Length: 189
Ligand code: NI
Image (cartoon, rainbow, N blue to C red; front, side):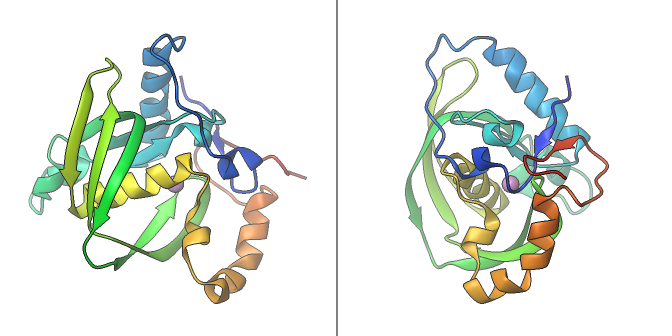
């Protein structure tokens, strides 16, 4: 089932999300719906707050980047569910990359992050993993993890750059933006 994606301006995106327990109702159904919603919107990652649920869960699918002629080896078969993740180490020198976000349609901004992350998480079967990641997978995971902390990409740029984007951000917050996937806006006029 495709769920509406919450747009910038909704308070759920600013909240620190809560961990879930193993008896969380209909978890697999929720995960399947999140993948479906993300694929429909052509996203590579989607965090639960973006569908209005303030819980520590996100999904990532980088498999399209791991296929074809200029395939990124890091992305090969990279389709995962992250539950109650903890990034316990980030290292290396920060580098900038243009990031977008399904909650902020048509906006891209350069965000600086460290290249290597160590993360611990459960998958949808409650198997526990500990991994070190770099490259594009690390970048996407840092972005999605930020969603669980209530941090959005405009929070990761300079105040000056944010000021320049103010008009566009205000328009998105009011739902004054056209998208080809289902969204909902807390402050729509
Ligand atoms: Ni995002």
